[in-house]
Amino acid sequence: MEQLSSVRVDAWIWAVRLTKTRSLATAACKAGHVRVNGDRAKPAQTVKVGDAVRVRTGERERIVEVARIVAKRVGAAVAAECVVDHTPPPPPREHVAIAGVRDRGAGRPTKRDRRDLDRLRGY
Image (cartoon, rainbow, N blue to C red; front, side, top):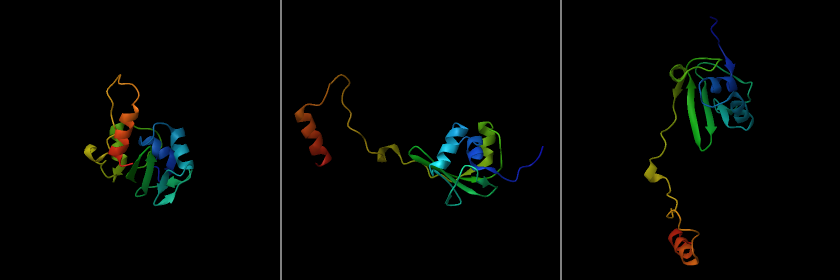
């Protein structure tokens, strides 16, 4: 088996399961959501062992370091060996802003309910 020294960044982030599909990985690169060593990465840019890769998916950004090069998608256990994860943990749930919750079946808020909500929000 031939040992790879570098591989395309879009193929690598798909292979280590940072994105669900290869086309999503390519689209993330084209949209500027992937950075390699601090610079925006095009899909064909190569990564090698030791490179720092930042991938933004949705509201979360993953910060990983390339520990091993893989070109084909691997299982979750093997994928965990290919990356060193430096992503900070998500904020605790109590720090996340809580949206107003209405009882199911309560219908639309009345004018009085809306005014109370506005007062609560500080408007």
